[in-house]
Length: 408
Length: 82
Image (cartoon, rainbow over the protein chains, first blue to last red):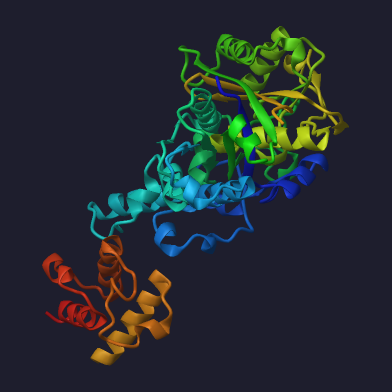
């Protein structure tokens, strides 16, 4: 089996749009959540907090490519472009068939979906629909548009599993390189902030409502006063590469993908079983050939919901005990849903490289049902060598990724 | 609206929607595909945009024959005043 390393990173997030800004935000406990005043006009919605990505230039993408992109695909394409440049991959190589792409998202652009479907509903027909509309709406809009822009001729996949989408996208790329089917995979996910997404969680009482006037105080993963998640957006893309190839061209190696596992609870569509999370984390350790004691830090999925945070805490306690440091990055950036797996993997890599671990922002009083594990409540200076990153989605779909400070 | 006024409005729409420089739209014989780089997907959105902007219905068969700016002006003009 080939070893797989990370040689390029591109990120657009509520904390900033480059590695340095993101690392600074994590280290200094900066919140990317703001009040979404414009959502107040949405009838019935009670959650008005979200994490927005600003400060990037869509014009970086030439119009012929950009015309079929909503904000979702634009962010995915810019992050992919940044990751490829960071890795130093030439355009000719991307067209060689030896490089593929795997980018997941929950849906196509929700804003474009809203516009298209409201036209259809209001007018009762398709008159007035742009020919480019569907390319913004389709489920693989982020992957397809990024692939076209980069000229990818290898395999292109677009895993869709809500909160596990981009973790699965990385796992897919990892497997393809391990088995020698591709030398390079551009992997990750994207999500576009929209009131309908907040509404999806608000309807099932999983969105934060109590902190609309103090948005930087939510979400509060593992905290006794947590009241749900804050939806947010972004794109997080990494270049995965066959280690031998990366070494032969003296590429910068950020980290190594040591293991990956994904599985399903096969039980309830919205309630995590707990057993599935355990199975997934254990399988990822087996995949990496590691024992629980080898893990130096766990980047939890914990979004700030009552049941999800407690179930994950209990699972971590059962496998890893109470010593390994644990934090959730959702306190900083909210829940980037389709992008969270790859975004938090990138956060983990940045922290591993810069020798610190960020705490769970807003975790002030550890909830009793989340106790028994080593919650990080302040930034610590430590050289974590092996990190486990969890992503758990509706449908009981679990994904665990293990990253290592190795491969060089 | 005179044909010149219509041409001017169409050029403004083209410049905005397809991010074209106004100076590239000065010659009526400019070809939409060869000179401006608009392809078949753009052509569909162009028709939809013209119909919305000028409140008219452009026949598909007539739209297919449009190759130049001048032909576009004629096509929209005809659709506006059938």
